[in-house]
Image 1 (tube, one colour):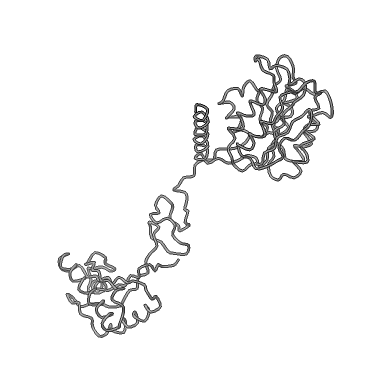
Image 2: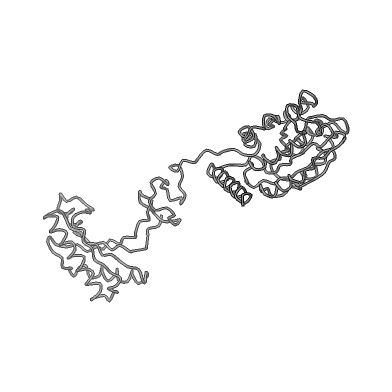
Length: 373
């Protein structure tokens, strides 16, 4: 039971870490990476300042690093040098699958020679088939005593396959060739170098992983974005997801289609004069092109009189037009509503006779039908 609890806690911790990374909007720096683990005889020596062999520490370091690499769509491979061997061919990276490959890295070495250049050369077939940005991460103490020089091989690969070389050094005061590792790292400005001692610290390891594998993109300003491309930024858009091609108001909401009926009324009147009968007949014909669409008949007044009286007068005007459309022109009454707005929505000045006449009007708002750009 205790073991199951520990596994559950580790899973929850990994889930939280993964979620935190996703929230930061991470962008991968490389498309393909291959980790090359040096298994030469000198890696069987103890790392100065520890009781562990370099190869054992290298494997443990890889396990920690693997858990910190975000799953951003990389292809990952894993090889060893001395002898040159492929543990995992380039394949889509996941923490679980790559961790299973890391577990296969042998820690029993013996007196292997150090053909580091040969181990690098063995990566070439994988790099030939890779597209995009490539990274090779070398875990080694830098010693070599056999085969073609590793710096020469790495230089050719950096140029031919667009490879950034990164090194994790196990060179110490007893054995190793730190200069060689530094020279390989410096082949391109993108190279990152660290020592195994430095990466014993989790914060340093996280920084190394970030430097090699990904960037944190700056959070986009929502007010600079317009997700539905309606011309109103996300901060002001109260109607997100507006279909393309529709005209919108200042709040980003589609503008209902409004048919202005040329039906005006005499002062303080709500009866429809004969001269407007044809206008209403034309509207009824127009609505046959929109079967099933509901219509709101809006009545309006000028500003003469009290607000309360004008509200009632505008309602009578809207009712009058609705009744005419239903009873005289046969429109479906269930699709027509009448709403009075009083003097609240003038379209002209109420300071002139002509303006007031314009404001004594009727408009038809088609529900679910919107203006196009």
